[in-house]
Length: 336
Ligand code: NDP
Image (cartoon, rainbow, N blue to C red; front, side, top):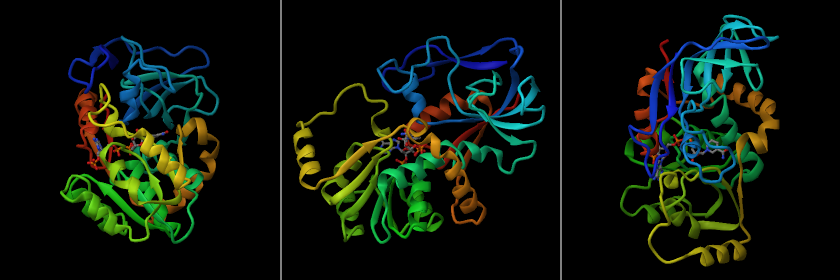
């Protein structure tokens, strides 16, 4: 059983010394447990938070512990009711070849699911994040303008496509011409603005002639600075993620603009609401799965995946994800 454990808490960007590859004996399941062989490991931005021991909504991974992560796995042997050898499951198996589970929180997809790895993306946690954040906090009304940051990523891409289905004008923000072409061409957003290009703020303003009613926040930082002046009275801002800050080691340079921001929130009566997907919206999973399953089957929601072979390549792929190198959902295919 190969596994990555947390070797050192990163300061700033994680590096080659953050995680350590170990080979240990394959774990043996006890009574009431099952043995899972991980086939796909999801790479997600929240993992950066678990590497840190700063106070957060979830406990950190301890030094020497296996790095956490969502997985699609095959049941090898089972003493858990409802799970049989050969079943494919969605679990929290971590960065390792094999995992033990008592079945809690594990979803059984049966022996032959279509596109099993999609359960780590559009049909799973990131999809639920997109759907619940937009519908529950965004409160979309037909004809409104939605702006989505991180528009080519698994959450952002899904938010925007749902927005289109609900009759919104949807403008994405993404890094680079290639991602923007995908966002408008393949995903069908009305427009996409490259935040790395010169004149980004002016182009964004031009793309939202009626202002912004909903801003789905995935990145924070300079992107939010450009969005803020364009927000309409009673705008809703689901605060989903702030990936531009996850590797930050301190406050950015510059004057303190918090007072100004709060003034805008007051005068324009805006709602900013953060959420943690399973804590706040886990109870809506069934409703989400039904709606999203239909949309994906009908081809109304498209999904882009970046499959990377080999557990040993997971750390570099994760560091790249935080640098903006991912184009679509990053998934590691394990080969045990
Ligand atoms: P993404 O694939 O969207 O995240 C990686 C992308 O983020 C990169 O490709 C890059 O896109 C963008 N990015 C990276 N660094 C920066 C930067 N400095 N400034 C702007 N953009 C940057 O991941 P997900 O779709 O999985 O997640 C999107 C967000 O949602 C994350 O912030 C994540 O933490 C959050 N999240 C929150 C949940 C919750 O419960 N609240 C649950 C799941 C996700 P580009 O090249 O376009 O810049």
